[in-house]
Amino acid sequence: MVDVDYLRKKVAEFRDERNWIEYHNPKDLSVSVAIEAAELLELFQWKDSGYDPKRLEEEMADVMIYLLSLSDVTNIDLGEAVLRKIEKNSRKYPV
Image (cartoon, rainbow, N blue to C red; front, side, top):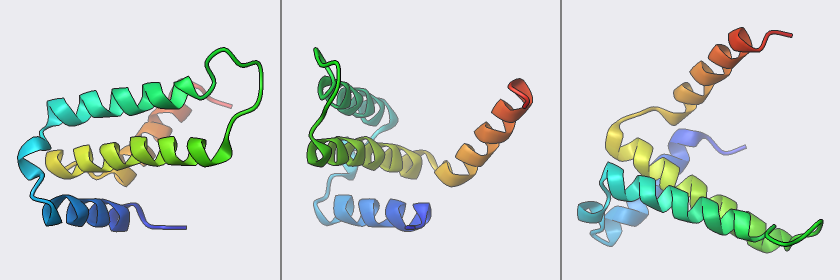
Protein backbone atom coordinates (compact mmCIF):
# COMPACT_ATOMS: atom_id res chain seq x y z
CA MET A 1 0.00 0.00 0.00
CA VAL A 2 1.10 3.53 -0.74
CA ASP A 3 0.95 6.19 1.97
CA VAL A 4 -1.57 9.00 1.34
CA ASP A 5 0.93 11.71 2.33
CA TYR A 6 3.49 10.29 -0.10
CA LEU A 7 0.89 10.51 -2.88
CA ARG A 8 -0.02 14.08 -1.91
CA LYS A 9 3.65 15.06 -2.11
CA LYS A 10 4.09 13.36 -5.50
CA VAL A 11 1.02 15.12 -6.91
CA ALA A 12 2.25 18.49 -5.55
CA GLU A 13 5.69 17.84 -7.02
CA PHE A 14 4.14 17.10 -10.43
CA ARG A 15 2.08 20.32 -10.18
CA ASP A 16 5.00 22.45 -9.05
CA GLU A 17 7.31 21.18 -11.81
CA ARG A 18 4.78 22.56 -14.28
CA ASN A 19 4.11 25.83 -12.40
CA TRP A 20 0.39 25.03 -12.14
CA ILE A 21 -0.10 26.23 -8.55
CA GLU A 22 -1.84 29.41 -9.75
CA TYR A 23 -4.63 27.24 -11.20
CA HIS A 24 -4.97 25.06 -8.12
CA ASN A 25 -7.47 26.85 -5.92
CA PRO A 26 -10.18 25.12 -3.88
CA LYS A 27 -13.02 26.07 -6.23
CA ASP A 28 -11.34 24.90 -9.43
CA LEU A 29 -10.03 21.73 -7.83
CA SER A 30 -13.50 20.93 -6.47
CA VAL A 31 -14.97 21.44 -9.93
CA SER A 32 -12.28 19.15 -11.32
CA VAL A 33 -13.15 16.43 -8.79
CA ALA A 34 -16.78 16.60 -9.93
CA ILE A 35 -15.81 16.46 -13.61
CA GLU A 36 -13.54 13.46 -13.09
CA ALA A 37 -16.21 11.74 -10.99
CA ALA A 38 -18.63 12.24 -13.88
CA GLU A 39 -16.11 10.64 -16.23
CA LEU A 40 -15.93 7.71 -13.81
CA LEU A 41 -19.72 7.38 -13.91
CA GLU A 42 -19.69 7.57 -17.68
CA LEU A 43 -17.91 4.20 -17.79
CA PHE A 44 -21.11 2.62 -16.47
CA GLN A 45 -23.66 4.74 -18.33
CA TRP A 46 -26.22 2.70 -20.27
CA LYS A 47 -24.67 -0.60 -19.21
CA ASP A 48 -26.11 -3.33 -17.03
CA SER A 49 -22.69 -4.83 -16.40
CA GLY A 50 -19.11 -4.76 -17.57
CA TYR A 51 -16.52 -2.05 -17.75
CA ASP A 52 -13.00 -1.50 -19.01
CA PRO A 53 -10.74 -2.12 -15.97
CA LYS A 54 -7.92 0.06 -17.36
CA ARG A 55 -10.20 3.04 -17.91
CA LEU A 56 -11.77 2.49 -14.48
CA GLU A 57 -8.31 2.59 -12.92
CA GLU A 58 -7.42 5.78 -14.78
CA GLU A 59 -10.63 7.61 -13.87
CA MET A 60 -10.33 6.57 -10.22
CA ALA A 61 -6.75 7.86 -10.24
CA ASP A 62 -7.87 11.17 -11.75
CA VAL A 63 -10.44 11.65 -8.97
CA MET A 64 -7.82 10.81 -6.35
CA ILE A 65 -5.24 13.17 -7.88
CA TYR A 66 -7.64 16.09 -7.68
CA LEU A 67 -8.65 15.19 -4.12
CA LEU A 68 -4.99 15.04 -3.13
CA SER A 69 -4.40 18.40 -4.82
CA LEU A 70 -7.35 19.89 -2.97
CA SER A 71 -6.11 18.49 0.34
CA ASP A 72 -2.69 20.01 -0.35
CA VAL A 73 -3.87 23.55 -1.06
CA THR A 74 -6.35 23.52 1.84
CA ASN A 75 -3.89 21.91 4.30
CA ILE A 76 -6.32 19.10 5.10
CA ASP A 77 -4.77 15.77 6.03
CA LEU A 78 -6.92 13.56 3.82
CA GLY A 79 -5.91 10.38 5.63
CA GLU A 80 -6.90 11.83 9.00
CA ALA A 81 -10.10 13.23 7.51
CA VAL A 82 -11.06 9.76 6.25
CA LEU A 83 -10.40 8.21 9.65
CA ARG A 84 -12.50 10.89 11.39
CA LYS A 85 -15.33 10.35 8.89
CA ILE A 86 -15.26 6.58 9.38
CA GLU A 87 -15.46 7.12 13.15
CA LYS A 88 -18.37 9.54 12.72
CA ASN A 89 -20.15 7.09 10.41
CA SER A 90 -19.62 4.24 12.87
CA ARG A 91 -21.48 6.24 15.52
CA LYS A 92 -24.21 7.16 13.04
CA TYR A 93 -24.57 3.59 11.74
CA PRO A 94 -23.67 1.24 14.60
CA VAL A 95 -23.34 -2.49 14.04
